[in-house]
Image (tube, rainbow, N blue to C red; front, side, top):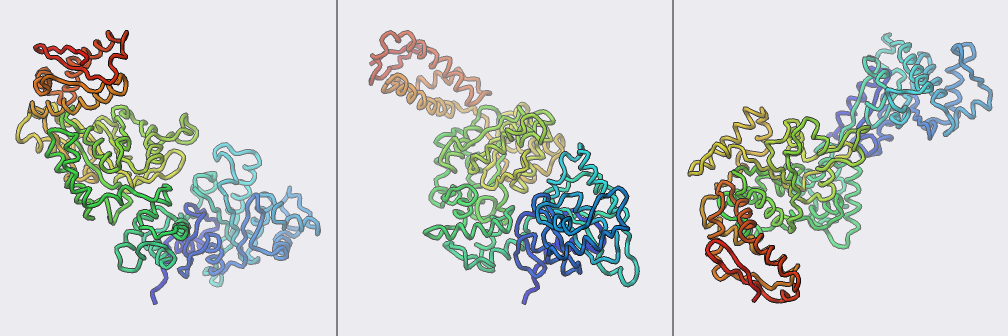
Length: 610
């Protein structure tokens, strides 16, 4: 039989409890954990069981609302009486231990912090009394602002500090291997306690309870394997089990239990991805699950329909998607599925289709161009701009609003995140991207963890565009400039390592007139749709469309790429057409259901209603 897994934090707690007189336990303290025998139990039960096995006579819990628990009223009364005979009362204390007071002090809801600390103090100072572990639950709620304590709170703090300072170390051969009475503060974060209590105090130790690790998650899933209502059951050695363990990264054991409950509520067995998607986002269908062979087979033609003249870039994007789909990186069945499903770095001159390809990719992956959420990184070029992404910390302006990035991912977890002109961001921002690409999550200003594992990330950049000339070596030169920028200028080679050099996608210069004409032709479609919606115009007809578009393209500054095409169309076609429509407003009903003919006169265009 395999030896049960024992969490490192539990071993650390057992060790610290024999050394210290005070321990702060923080982290994942509100969930189920594994006990010393490898069984899953609520945290409080595991804590009690551990301390009892260490040799503590009593394990007493206290909270301001719940009073004391874990000890009978009779034993509590005896503890009070034995710990505080009248001759030993500290000067200034005002305690009267008649029967009525004993009843009040041992009540479950009426014990004040001062009364509780007084009893704990005397038990800890009296080596002849039974060894007690005093556990203060929700200790982060015991004190207010840690740097602005009230008079009453300072009194409690003095009581605790005196208790710890005056507790003698029992060093005889009989006692040295035994536990000593102990005070344990259970809280969500050690920084919620006054620093005077713990900082520089050798009597205090700290134990952090982490989220369940891979071994613990696997153990929990296997323990529920017959309970899950899935299309395939997770068993030892199966790929499904590996995927399940990956997908539950950042989940607690209690949340894994809830996954099992959720699966039982479904009328039909779900796939693993569908179950996790339903639990996290309330959606049964994950776009990643719908990415199949037939859809991926046509990705090149789908993307080329919108992005002209960038066949090499589209081929590289296809390679990344195929690599990921087959399980050799991010998208599906990854050993690190907590990471974003993919990351691409588009680099090239302005106006050549980098943003357009990102939008096309979002539409391909998620069925909606609006799933592309764009962040202009030139707006994040100062040191504290990271607060705009993840939200201001407590106490600062904008704290309630949260962060632009974290809010966007919370609202739409299945999305493509487009970070435009990443080279303009402050280096401090790049550290956030390191965390996203490595761990697939960020903690916002409110302390909530936002999961990025269902996003696809695209960075764009113009690095090297002003120095590189069009030609056969341009694509390789762009890659070289990107590497140089991250290694030598930003001194963050690790970020480039997270993205991967194979995922750097260089874009060609737009020097071929045929490509520019194709772009212009693509821009005509939304114009025709708008004319029909706004004015009821059935079509926009050219006597010779290719000739007209060639005329427009001849006016394009080719260094501006596709953006130059749009600028030329605005000045040569859109503005004259707008003027024609404006002049005809007195009888705009004449447009209804009729086309407009574009008549070319040299390099200019006239219009008439057919």
